[in-house]
Image (cartoon, rainbow, N blue to C red; front, side, top):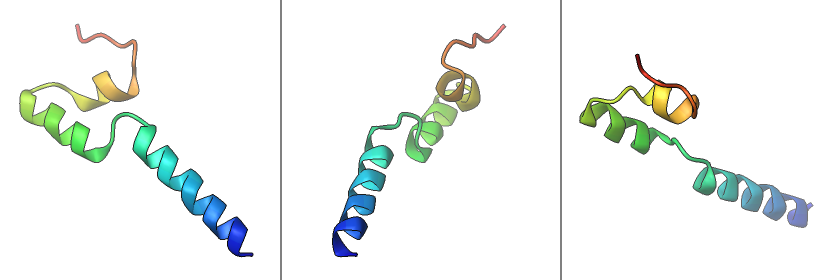
Length: 48
């Protein structure tokens, strides 16, 4: 049971650390005047 818990915590930590577009990045983008939904989530979307 303990190894499973450690594995789940480790995987969750790694996903949270390496997935781009977290809440801090979204706030930075909003403060700079960019739309976070277009730049972070879309990837290939362009603002027209």
